[in-house]
Image (cartoon, rainbow, N blue to C red):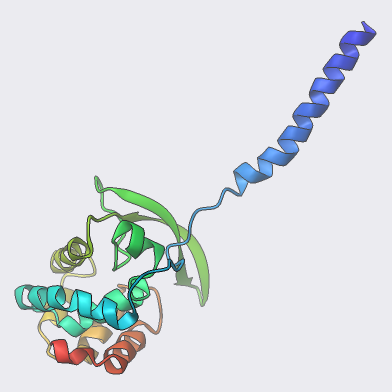
Length: 193
């Protein structure tokens, strides 16, 4: 009887010990961060030059200024070096739509006056061109408001387009338009319009 008690006590202690170690690991299992930088073989300028011909072609097809497409891709993907853009080819941080291949990653969201992390199911693409085309299709279909596409595609001013995208809520960043305009002006992206 005493031997059975010792065995039961021993098993209980081992189980509690294992639970004490494993439970915190399970509860705090890390979700990777969308914005985590990945080492890439190209520079910021190289990223823009690589994407510019596609942006110009799609700009002609959809009417959205190429400078806006490039600045959004640069800002959202950290010039193609974010985990989401390198591994999953999502350069616009587009959330997954129903039935679309997805990856769950942490993303920083600005809400109630502060930045916080939230887990988001992001869309997965085969390449950056597919990401850009899907973004433009979603914009045209009214994902960020029915009039947003007409307002963005209907202007030749990248400043107006950036402000319209911010007003439509494309990003939770309260300075989104300022960031896009700064990227366009610093990198001279208006030459692609």
